[in-house]
Image (cartoon, rainbow, N blue to C red; front, side, top):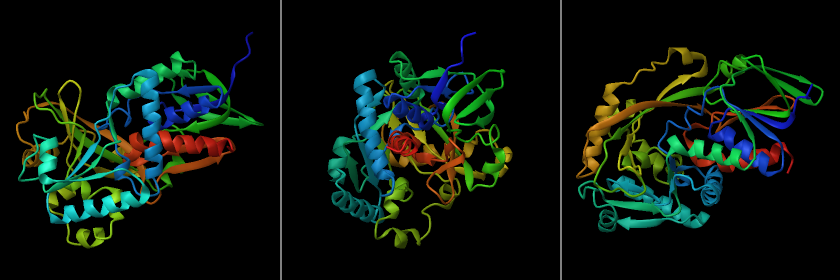
Length: 386
């Protein structure tokens, strides 16, 4: 009988957070196995905008995002990923938002993160589809990226397998774990099992398969986002487009001196605020445009009560607000979907060693595509004491 291979690390979950834990461990020369319950990664790592925007992160997390930019660019050279390096535009629609982008630009200068203030004329010159009536000015981040999330994670998996960095087992639902001495056993629903010296569980918003009591007692919650894709466009929109509502929402702007005073004035539109809507645009290489998004929240212990159907009202609001911002677009909807991610209400991420050598890392929130590569690098170094 051939003895069972013992891995240095088993990662449960092949989303962006689990994948980069596996990648960085493999780069250390460790033997790595990735187990994914579905036939491919299907969760939040696929169902998102694909905007890699460290500019939106607070000072505690922006470093992870900036490191992630470097990692993505390195992998793009290696594996020719579906990545566009056209930067990010924040578009201010009024005087209050102009104050915030000016203050963030000052903070960026202090932290050494490159940004460029644009007046209305400069902004509309770079973005011809942008309505002059909306754009008062902007803040541009030239180093930021957009990716196609429906392709990117699969390209990374393919590259890792082709380079022999990790073993991947799909359709592999982990139902239990046990530890004896310095080895943990991972048991699958199909009867198979694997042994590893360390286990990292990146379960996204799956709070039922493993350790449900821990998640129910945590401050984790699931966030449901809706977004849509407009049909192929002749118009060209370069880069990530983040608008005034994004300026009022993103964590980086909360550190601006004027934010609390502006926030205290209340929402610009109560219905948009009730749906957690801010308006983002991103054009894909096929000419279609991603538009959204909305946010609904439920605690981990209430997840079964989530309405998983798509609501029509957010889509109507996306189009209504989008028409205030962009000229010359076709507003016909090609597709719409919901994405789900987990986040903590207080902490920035859920990261616990729940048993010796068994770690759970989830709840990274909406910053997963931006911060996961950089955060996973630091976390792997911490776990392996480097």
